[in-house]
Image (cartoon, rainbow, N blue to C red; front, top):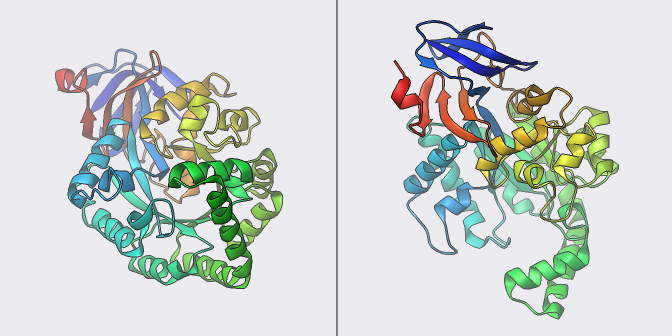
Amino acid sequence: MWLSDFRVVTPDCVLERGSVRVEGGRIVEIAEIPMPGAALAGDGLLLLPGFVDMHGDMVEREVEPRPNVRMPMELGLRDLDRRLAASGVTTAYAAVSFHPGSAYGHIRHFDQTSAIIRALKSMNDVLKVDHKVHARFEITFPDALRVVEGLIAEGAVDLVSLTDHTPGQGQYRDIEAHVARVAREKGLSQTDAESEVARRIAQKHSAAGDMAATLRAISATCRAHGVALASHDDDTAQKVALMQALGAGISEFPVTVEAATEARTRGLATAMGAPNALRGQSYSGNLSARAAHELGLLDILASDYHPSALLPAVLELAKADPQGLAGSTRLATLNPAQALGLRDRGAIAPGLLADLVIADDSGIGHVRATLRAGAKIFSDGSIFLARAA
């Protein structure tokens, strides 16, 4: 079938009145002119590749929308699937954690996280989006090593990020701000919050030897099973160098220009959040994704915690991108696909999967329809259902 008369966003340019022919779930031909008798006429709407989202934190909140309010797993995963498809996401890496001592409590307990992963994998044939698993491995919590290694051996994990949320570095470099946050979130006094933060810092220092061994073990497991490895919240050049030595190919959410620059020098792809890029600032006061983009230090946009921000962020960054919309679109499509080893998607090009997004770029942007392998997985009813042959 032909999709005709769209502004087709290719990796290098935008075809103002282009057409794309899809057969057998793949793109087989691209034309720079409208084609007669098309299955769908775009009338100048955008046609983009489906978004490849390497980091989305939403799954835990879909399964447990309020603390200790557990919903049926199938319901939560179906709701997440619909939300992603409506945002133009065709490949999604669900970011799940293994840290029962975190502020999220039992939702990140080993058993609960493992259950979410296995349920997601078992439902992939009935869900609309291609769901993959991003395991967030807290390096200060070595008890999770055995569990994560087992899941990797099962083939249930597609990406591992090495996270460290110890106060005083990374995302929480500002100790005073972090103490205030702990007091607010846990309902503690200032004194008790300071004691809690001091305890966590001391705990990390006392476990330094175990942490080094844990890092070596998890990186070796990822390497042996061909699982992509990313660092998280890099704040110094030294940390980037360490993460690269362990095999990381992605620097996820660098919090300083120094770290992002070092990642670029060392050939790591830098990933930041679409909400950060759209708002122009990090909610925690760290590096702005928009500033990183203007400095040429941004490679990947991820939904982080808000998938509907992806399209508006792409449109916003297009205003300053040297290659306009073609350049900013790569941040959420081709670049993450390449960084994660997905060679069959991420661009509108012959031979690749027909994972496509039909969008209106008026205002902040609006996803009209989403196709995965040429099949509709979302439509707002405005054009696709009314005009498809």
